[in-house]
Length: 258
Image (cartoon, rainbow, N blue to C red):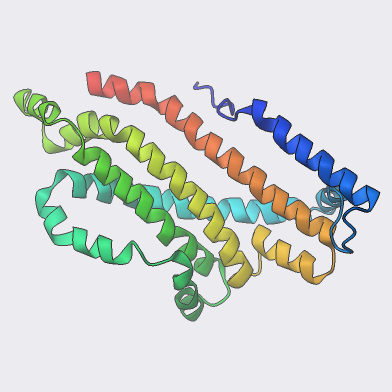
């Protein structure tokens, strides 16, 4: 079994946020910062505990994680597949690359009104807003990784009379994995951001909606607690992608060697 523990988080950097939180706590408690709705970190922690006891935090967190997972997984499947085709096949690149270049610069939030018209305030809108911006960095990085593969590697595959599918799976995919990983991590960050945005403007559920809900309820402790949870979720998701990639890398190298 591969070891999927979150080893790629640099815990040595935790000193900086601890210092910042300590300064924040001191400034609020000493009255140097006296905004009515700007709580101290200790009050935010108490608010988070209350959310956990009420079950709200886990419910909202689970919804957002499911949305991100579905949107990002769909973007990975389509983006890697399309990127391999565009990078490997000149014919595919000739007929479809222009369409990619037209759609890629469109901001993901621009699809929010379209999603709302088609699906209303629903998880379908959230998935659409999270999926589309996530797709492009995965596709472009995969295509670039394949295009930068040494031509000699393809010549070796043809010398051994490998089929096109074998060349893609055994040679191109492992060689392009570093670029694919960059696209996957970038796409995952975008999926998180766009899911939160979609929950704020298009789907009354999840962490994004919870931030607005607590703000409207004049509950700043809970609101800031949700904001911190979003930050922690981004760190954990990024580390998870790195660990999964490191876990499957030996298998890909073995496939390439075989």
